[in-house]
Image 1 (cartoon, rainbow, N blue to C red):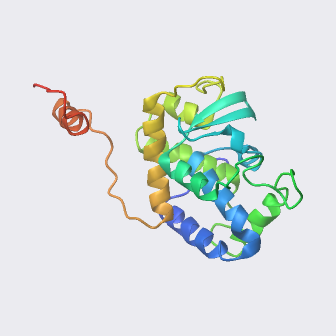
Image 2: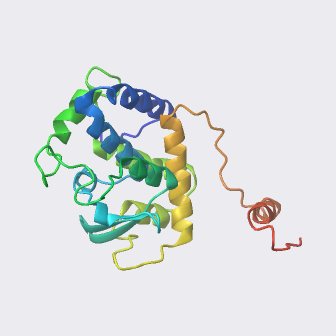
Length: 218
């Protein structure tokens, strides 16, 4: 189980399972939590305890006050921001996923997780599998170990100060790519995966397309 990761077909299946489960009232909160785990690679406890005060939409990151690595800033992709925006109450205060008792965490998540996946082909997966799958997908898309470490909050690469205001654009772009790809798979989109080309001509073409005001010459 330590090296278990989801294939693209299993991401498709995960999306189908979550869509079906979201129609059951007792599963609605948990399905959003599971989707957020898949799109961020966060640890289970980080999502269970996520507070609206830790969600920084403007800088596209989660400013976790107390993760396993201490205070930690996690750049997140647009798919994550869109999901959180859809859940945002009129007055975003307290926990993003509160329990049934006011100001308590959603303590029933582990049991509901099992119920969501019961009798499915993904009955064996855990939140850690989604975390490992996020990292593996990032590697498939040719992001570096340090970039992946920063997105996952590993001590060797994490942004440790929650007081940092400007997040590295490259990390946000990486988060956009990874979460966007995973979100597409969850929605059964068929991709032709294209890693960023490293040859000079392709890089010039990409720069001209994204920054047209700059003239590049061969």
